[in-house]
Image (cartoon, rainbow, N blue to C red; front, top):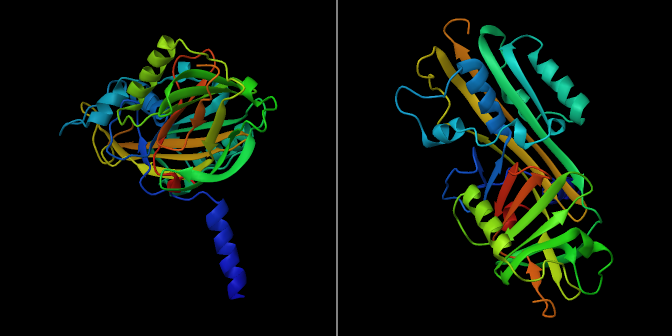
Length: 335
């Protein structure tokens, strides 16, 4: 019996994403952090936009001083215009007896998903309490599944990889575009998908904000004069990524919105992400709960090995801004 229990626990650890310690969830692409591994999804910004525009009816300020992240969120640098309505669900209103059931049924119907955060929220019904909720869901396949490449080093440990090797070209290189290749530690590629999404991977040790890194990648792409086709001698290695992380934005909670009788009770975001040789699955949820006191060169082989710190951006085709960013430094947090 002990062996069976141990085997089950081992399987859960190996194949189930868990809270990945020290992966910082950022509220905006311009947010700064000292944490090496960090992630951003536009979900919390969508919630903030509705809270700001449809409940507070103004930019959010706190009487005792407004945190930097609130000023960043107030800029609304990510909006519904930056992502298809097929990819998100939103709910806003007073908290009623059936609020949880309404949201649960809606995300089940639209995405065939369940919530990771609803059970944690205080949804006690009240005409003086509001909820703003959003789920962002993406599930897409690469044009052709990549090869599983097995285990190889990532920094100072081992990781599972997928990609393209010189021994198995298939049709894989047709779905990969080289953005630039300055050297083995500074390059970026774009991977095409069956649908409207694009995957950008940029190998860089830059620790600046996601919006800076994204613009830096585009500048280098524009300046690059080399071959942008994935050549016969090129190779590609990308680590599998699988994690679940959740964050309560403590700087926001418990504050009264200046000039109103609104108090923010809860502000939370969760992110579940999986990328392997077949494609990407992303589910992110966010919610704000508030209350009022009144009703209210070609021939040379280029080795595209993402085996050290790198950044991923996800963006819809025809859109100018990404809806997801992830910096990977310590691979043990993701596998």
